[in-house]
Image 1: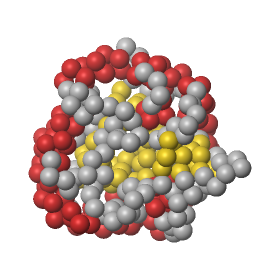
Image 2: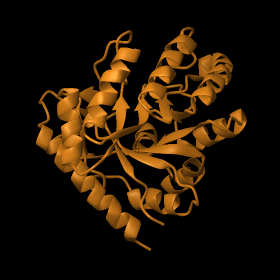
Image 3: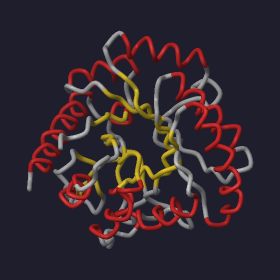
Length: 285
């Protein structure tokens, strides 16, 4: 089996303009992108980012570089009162930029009933656009419906919706557990129920008790376990490099912004090194 094509989540270039970010993706030797609109991680205007005009501008930028958009990461709490309205806007945008996957958080335990009501409506809307909803397990906070791959698998099975799957983030699952996750078991449950995988890694900051994000395979995470599970599947999920180099995790694994800016070249090198390391893992028996 060949390694599935890996998309680049544009959070890695969050501190530069979209044209520069797309040029950097090309420089790194990639041709698939994942647009990123996650509050707290990316800067965007809720009422301007998802318009038809914005989609048209992005499509032109993509096409001029022979790039395609496979997924849009635009997380919201789907249990909130305005979730259907906000997510409908994101669904239309995803369809307009040619994405087949729209990624979001699910909700919190106290909003479980509203989440189930909303996801049924949104699944129907997404189906009409040919979009699959990928529910991501978060990496911090409390009371989330999806704290791990195992919890996500249970939710996806309960929903039983063909176009609602997981966007499994292995690093988030590890962080949420305080690095105590049983990785093999969690991957075995989550990966088969996933439409996409978010890949990121981190290591201890030098002289600090914080964690810096880094290239896949250069940090603390056992990606051999995840890749081995992916290789077992006849129809494996797609994968996206999510390298939020402008962020770091505190000792309690909550996220914070770095004070220093990350050079564009550092992002390009992190993508290139990640792909080299993933290719080595993929080639392992």
